[in-house]
Length: 243
Length: 259
Picture (spheres, chains in turn red, orange):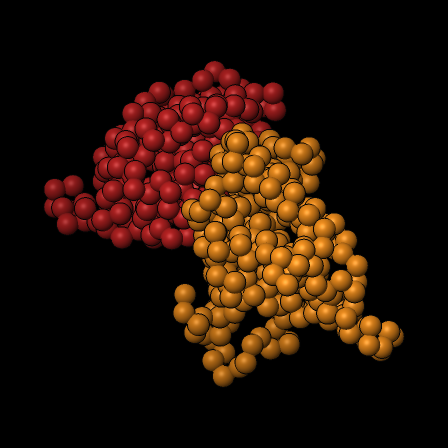
């Protein structure tokens, strides 16, 4: 589904952020991108979305990411931004959710049917006509996910989906992620959430992939995590004796 | 937010209040945005076209805003409160007329003030009963270039982003300078620089988010619909009324009925 072959990204001043990344993600997989601040997780996502230029080959569903394929590739990808305020730029949840489908040329009726379907799927029908500035942080995060799902992407990318959420809303987001039957890529520092949602983890440090494997294997490897400025998930810290 | 918050937060709340007002539900809110836009333009045109000494004729034109305020359930006081910064400027128009024209100048000054105030009230009615994307859709319908309409919409959204950043930064500043009134002059340079960088950052994130949802420079407005019978009746009735008020001396005719 997604293929990175020797992908690099550098800023104009020469600072290299992504260094020779190669990996593949199959359809239906849920992959966690972990790593300390500045490891390159968000940059990797932006490269995949075509928001940043890159060297090397990036493929989505066998289509190579370039100017000609950009529109078709973006149609397959949905990106949930870290700050929902940046994502929800229309006055109401409804208008925000309609934005994507209408831009893709769907009629108002079709777009509205999608909005209703997604709101029902996420149990958010009550938010439909609410103003974005009047809903809570947790509701806004769920609404941001909903705006992306109305476009029916094949892959959903989420940048820190659990930041600044209380435990109940965090659990709500985790459940929503687990209920989605599409390919998911989640960049997060919340290793407990990664443990709850992902089958596979890619550990990054300084723009390179340090480890790529099963979630359980990587998140239980205390030495590996510590060497990359991370800690065991809280859930596993109490179970040290069993690791 | 309460009155205790900073001025930027209050400004942001006022912007949001306008959005809420525009999304209200009344027969006026339900009218097609294009009709409201055309009626407003026509109203302003007819108000401005009155002779500068025709106070009585102009008074009749007050019926439109008063009537619409009442049907749209908007308090007149809300209108004057929201226009409090612009109204004094409008009222200053013609302030020198009495000096140049003597007694007739007083009349022309009052007429000019009335024209300005009425025009502002009509514009307020349009903005307070029509969401911004509805207005933009109306502008596109009369073939205003897409780039201008998108620019208008994005500027409106950007103001919100900018004001929100100002609110956050002023709060952060005040918390570390509790005894100061406002922001010290020597901090203005870095404050404005940071504000520009932060708001540009936010704006570019917003733009990314729009691009990723297939935005190609043309807005497709969710609230768009076709004209219906009521819209046409409203348009014809309003413009008919304005023409009558402008060309028939309604005050004299109405007065003649009772005297």
